[in-house]
Image (cartoon, rainbow, N blue to C red):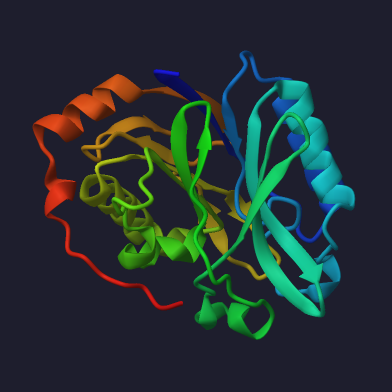
Length: 259
């Protein structure tokens, strides 16, 4: 596919209430005016950013089944993260659920130690890059945005679209906006960042600032602080043309990443 459509869902979240969050998000998804190749939800979309282990679910229970249902109904790839309990450990796990019920998963690599996330969750040890409808996608979670090496677009496993799902507080909004642009420019890629709005149970304020950027770091859409859903379209041919005319990635440093 030369054109990829991506829907950003920027919303407030009910604190530690999966039932309310899934119901609210289901209504928003059902009301979308057009179909989309990818639908992106915020980080921990069923609970908010919580260290409460009681919220965590085993895989293939309520939230996983809900994601499968939404993906099947929309024909979209549905992306978001939630707290998962597995093998005695807890993970902030990103799920990419396909319409046929199959899914890919990746655990958040960089845990936010200043929020004690590292004391609750186990970090991921690998990065996910996969093909969807002719596009190579790399989805990451919130704090991963601050670590450019982890996000690096390398020739051995390249991507066309970098996605971040987040609960990024308003007090660090400048970093969110600046780093998303940097990741787009340095990796010559489209970037989507989906953040929540509202205030959570830890009294942290979120102002959204969800955005879609092109490979120059220029905005395709900016969602501001409203509760809103927005669909954007990216061009594969325009991306390929830019990379051919300005092949900066070919001059990248070689490195080995030890996880």
